[in-house]
Image (tube, rainbow, N blue to C red; front, top):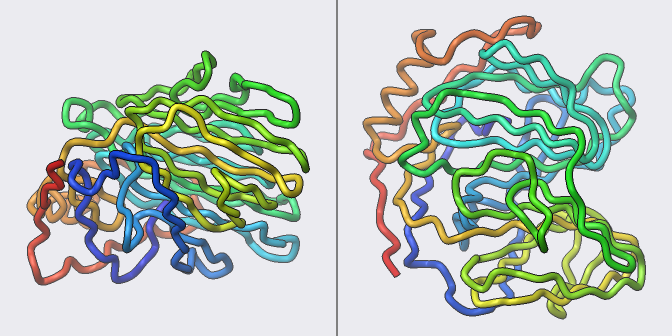
Length: 321
């Protein structure tokens, strides 16, 4: 999914200086961003107070939106480098097209995982006809240096492993949780899981003390380590936890995001995750000239134009612990 801001703010992230090495309960509020003509998303990462959680570098939550009489999601072809995109739905469908020739419809709790590597372009749209409601999350994972120039690929995994407990089903999206491992390709120690809880359920989820974690609320109300987390908000949890207490006040859905703190210094601008201003400027120029990123065939519309770069050079700044 694209960052459709026409004046995107460069985000300096990565490194470990701002990683909280102990358990915390830091509730993050979203920033509302227009996505095309008919949709609005709630952006949780990057956030003014928190830029990354492990390798997770971008989190949008959208819906549930009634799109029965609307076009729904309509994101024209746009470029990516240096990251993976994770498409995750609770309701509705998204039709993915990309410059490797992939055409794939993604449904609820099916993993669409695109690795941009050195360069890819793609589009996303609601199928015609489409379901009445659209509800999901779009996430980016930063690629480490040794893999950021890999060949672009797309993976579709309609079946994913799950961990169950009374009143709880945890679907493993990326990485592994309590012995269940996702088939999705991961390039850093990471976890992404979708948790469905029934009202009144109480559970303690096993965690890795060396990982930092956050919880994105999708629906309902869940108390996470005693903190009420409502839909469209994200609770940052820091590191140093071996388990996470959960209590569902209603039927609810949350996403657990975590991983080893990302050590490299990054500059993220528009749809690019890079290491320097020069890399971003070259990627933007290549996109505007129609080279490097390939062609998305079959989308009914023109590709997105890249925004103008800011006047001030973008510099990665370290967060050395």
